[in-house]
Image 1 (cartoon, one colour):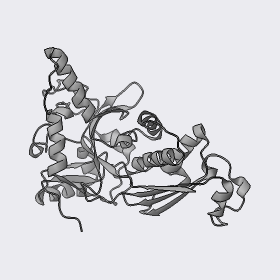
Image 2 (cartoon, helix red, strand yellow):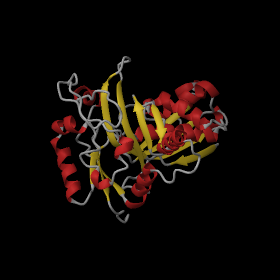
Image 3 (cartoon, rainbow, N blue to C red):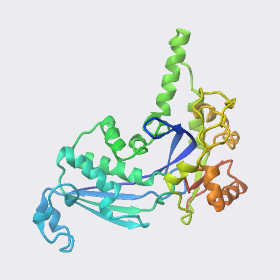
Image 4 (tube, rainbow, N blue to C red):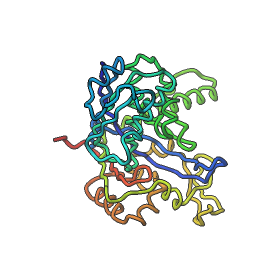
Length: 341
């Protein structure tokens, strides 16, 4: 028997653009995912403990008779894994938990030993924070280590993509530019290197380009701001409904600040498009009203109390406030980190 405990964190969306549907029926997105946890926010992470057993006998001996009445019934897939949920209520059946899906995904390829997964839930569910996705990816990481699978980051990212569109982010858990339907992930550190490389080619020089504006922006954000998050459990936002009511942008050329002449199919004028990788290089104090979440306007109409939460955070000193994902969590960036109790 071997165990490992991990602490899944969350993410916030710094800007979220929703474009028209693609040919495959998915919407084109653009966002910056930024990791949050106890080190830079008021969030308490989930606690995930995964235990694997050498065989069925050892597995069953650790379970109550109610959990394992017939040892021979433990076959493959979900029959080999027990999911235990504590803390905040998690919707649905335990066997449908994303952690079980992560186990089954690896079990199909590697015939994993039996396992018990215990999830102590602290991150709110359905808040746009990616807490469930983080749980699933941490399960992949735990099983990779416990079962000596030796999966590379690229392989883990591939498996994570099968769990959900935003899951690959949590493999590296670094600030990233997200495009496509959410499956195209570029860590901003890689983006910085790519920009430097392009500049060097254009100038036919190989000397250092110095610290990039994005590097400075990320350093400033991590060193000088804390993230405070407010979740309203009475405001459940259906992602499907949110996509149906959000005004969609026309796909325009990057870094074009002028709006297009046409209107989108929702009947509203197109919104000006400036790439988020350009906007985040501006001072944080200038982000409000420029770095936006396209879901905010329609979701606030549905839940006016969320707009009041946003206004309250501004009044208490936040220099930038936004909804994350399709809601309903609201986060604010505060100039100094408050002391934790």
